[in-house]
Image (cartoon, rainbow, N blue to C red; front, top):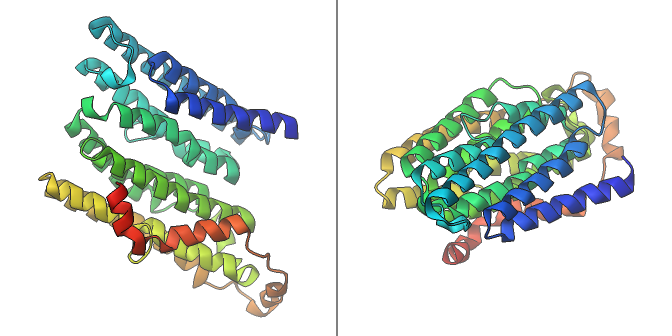
Length: 346
């Protein structure tokens, strides 16, 4: 892609996100979401492969439908209450339509079907954008309207997201699809706590972004798109493989890694809110995710390719670890000891 064009699209992405995050008026928030959608479409379809074009078309249709619903819900609310302010979403029907719209934007169950397909049709770097940066504006809208959303609906969607994200990721062989289902499962954790402790949902999103960015950048450095390629990675790039192993375990939420922190705080908050059954169910469902993270970790570190002697020579041409990967890995692994400080901020 032309560097000037790429610069324009990335700038538009930043602009769209900033407009949505900083707006108080529904029309401005909607404008930011539209700019975002239009800026990311060329990035998805830049390879001109039929699958990439198909992914861009699916993405456009879903996001256009979701944006229409956002506008519709805000207009209905303005019609009933006379308020265009984002935090004044008080009409129950409008709140319900908004929940459906933002769920479509994010890829929450039952509006999740588009996300794995779009991620599979994109490159790894575009996949990283779709999994992290493109989810931030809708999450901020949920954060701003959290006091007027329906808690039981969000809890149901969250538990379904954690269940389907785990189950559907079990037999995948493509790394991008595995990361897509991982994203759906993590969104479940963010959604379940959103009404009770919105800041905790945002903290979960930030830490999820850190860990996902590390995984995508590492996979991109090693040029890995499927599990069979991952199996030969250890002999080519042992340091990157180790990084990938630790970050995957952190994404799974194993102590003493960073990924354990948001799960721990969410379970604690749910228990305080007398929602122990929901906490138990979502914790058990995260074991499904743990299985496919462990499967990835097993493939990357324990399996060795056939004819090992031929592959061992490639040790000497292994790539040095990128600085950004090194910094992100440190944050993805080592933030748990400072959790008291993070808890006071939250």
